Length: 342
Ligand SMILES: CC(C)(COP(=O)(O)OP(=O)(O)OC[C@H]1O[C@@H](n2cnc3c(N)ncnc32)[C@H](O)[C@@H]1OP(=O)(O)O)[C@@H](O)C(=O)NCCC(=O)NCCS
Image 1: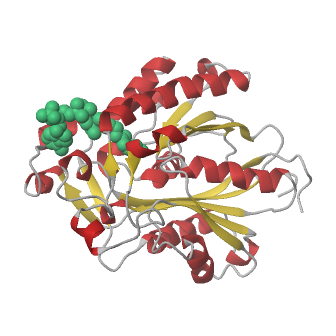
Image 2: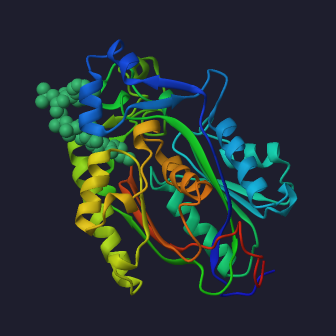
């Protein structure tokens, strides 16, 4: 058991996207849109689509296996699995329980966490509490989605934006001076109707009418969500940095939720942060919701872009409405011997 008060950090990462690429050109044949509109208004060029036989847990499992391998951690060492998702295989059981079984993580507790596209940061912060309290040593945090299953392919306002994917991180104790420095979690429940799926829950159970009225798909007020997102990412990051006693100059990389390049650029501008210090994958994967931040982080880590001691700021927003910021001093788990409490 690590000592209480130990900092939590990331000890291994993995990501997975399905093979099938859906291009803007293909979407032109499905709804009244153009490649030019999608690229100019969102920055998205293509996204991935799960194969018919793949559900969210299949994507989550692939990312989780890679993260465990990267962390040189066996499934039996995992104490807890948290999956952040908006698109579970079914309303219950939890995706995390399916992954726990298929990984063979016999000792692990498992649950899903629902916080819209902000879910990964929420889950990371929950994982960190178990590490810093000394209760657990290894928590597997996953963001996984099959959003192409819940978008309305007749609604051009939404169907061009989303994609499928998964990212995972093994969270554990890291040496003094590294790991999660500060987290800020936010919510504005009054904005719930701006981004939601109306039917399929206890308020409006599935019926012939709900299906005919296309109420089992994502409904979104894009303009309002856009404004909220820029505020959440930009102002939210500034506030969190101030609370942590850091300034924008101290930040090496900003990892925003990948929903729209214009949101990312506006947030970077608010922070006065040059785009070469902002991680972007929305062009290749669209909005993968809870998977977007771990996928972007995993890519930067595997390309050795992020160095030991770098300060990274992860910032997300999404349905709820929710938003969150997480500030982490990167521990280069690939190059260093594991330190105290590992
Ligand atoms: C959805 C979004 C891309 C729309 O971009 P926008 O510049 O705000 O566009 P508007 O909403 O002003 O719509 C402009 C026009 O384009 C049209 N349009 C919408 N989608 C289109 C598409 N795929 N192709 C062509 N035209 C489209 C709209 O119908 C509207 O037409 P109208 O003026 O005749 O009604 C943008 O608002 C956005 O990204 N919002 C945030 C969404 C988000 O991040 N959601 C997930 C949060 S986790």
